[in-house]
Image (cartoon, rainbow, N blue to C red; front, side):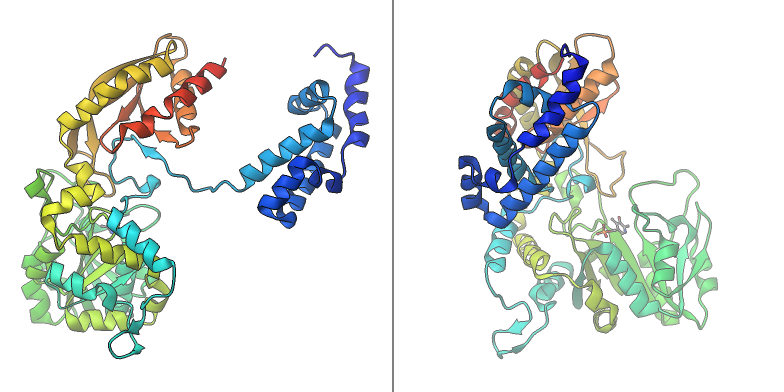
Length: 491
Ligand SMILES: *Cc1c(COP(=O)(O)O)cnc(C)c1O
C-alpha cells in the first residue's frame, strides 16, 4: 500500500459519511430489481446488514483490502455497494445442502448422504409431496388408516415376514425393539457384539436408553450356545444379535448363529432379535459381491425380529425397517415410543417406491443406483477414465499431471473395509516436488469449491478420483473450465 499513512486513516473514515442510506441503496436500479425479485423485507434486511458491515470494515484497523480496493477504484460508491448487495442476496439464498460428485471410491458414503435414491423413488416423493395423500387414510373404507400399511405388505412379501413396521432409521429400530420387548427386563448380548456403530451408537448405551438391563455373555473372541443358556433367567426378555461388518475379530473365534439360538429362544420363551445393520433384500453374492445375510435368511433361521437400514445396501431413503413375528411387531408398533420415531411421509413415499423395485429383480442393477454402482463393470469405469484423462490433464496443467489408474472401491456404510471392488479413475500428481501435501490440499479445496463440488481422496502423494459412482462424464467435463480458471487464479 503506497498511500501515505494519513490518508489511509482519513480515506476510509471519510468514506463513512459517503455511504448511502438503506433507503437509497434499495432504490438504486439494482436495489429495485432485487426488491422485485425477492420482496422488500428480505432486500431491506440484507441492505441494512451489508451497510453495517461496511461501516465496521471502514472503522477497523487495518481496513480490509476488499473495501479499500473498491473505494480506490470506484468513484460511485453506491453502485459498488449495490452490486455487493446483489451478491449478498444471492449468497444468502444459496442452500447449505449441495449436490456433490462422489469420487471417493466409497459407494455408500455416510457423510455424502448414503444411498442415492432411485429415480422411481424421487418421482414418487415429488408426486406425493405436491399435494395431500392417503398417508393415514384408508381409501376403501374412507376411515382412518395406518401409515405402516403403505409398506407393510411389500416388506412381508419381500422378506417372508408375518408383519413389518418402519421408523426413522435403524438405530431407532433397535432402540424401539429393545424398549418394547425388553424394557424393565434383561436382554442378553455377546461380548463379541458389544459394538459401537458410529456416532455414539453403542450397544450398552442403547440398552440403557431402552430401559433394558444388558446381560453380557461370552468373551470378545468366543461366545458359545451354553453361555446364552446359562444367562437366561426369569428376568430375560430377549436374546440380541448384532451384525457388524465394519470390523472383524479374526483367529480363534466363535459365535452362535441365529439358527442355533432360535430353538433355545423358543424353548425358554424369550424373543430372538437381530440387528442386521445393512440388510440387503437380495443375495449380493449372486452379483459377485461379498455375501450379506438377508432378512429373509434371518427369519427362516427363526428370528422373531430383524431390523435393518433403508439407506445402506437397500438403496433407499433413511429408514429403520423392522420385520418379523406378528405378536412381536404388534407390541413394537403399539409401544408409545413408536410415535416419536415414526417415519415421515417423505421417506415413506421413497421407501415404497424403492421396495417396489425389488418386485422386478431383473431390472435392479439398472434401476437401483446403489446396486448399479456396486456392480458396474471395471472395463466401463476404465473407459470413462480414459475419456476424462486428457481434458482433466489440460484443466490442471501445468501444475498437476494426470494418469489413468487402477483403484479399489469400497462398499461403505458398515461394510467390511477389506471387501474391495476393482475400480478405475484418475490420479492427479503435483508436478513440482515442493510442498506436495499443501498442493494436494489446495487442489482438493478447489475441487470442493466447484459449482457441483467434486470429492476425491488424497492418497499419499496423489489426489485420486474414483469414477465408479460417476454416471455421466459430462457432470465433470462441464466443470473443467471453472477448475482451470480457479487453479490458474491461485498464486
Ligand atoms: C448402520 C448400523 C446401524 C445404524 O443404522 P442407521 O440406519 O444408520 O440408524 C445399527 N446397527 C448396525 C449393525 C449397523 O450397521
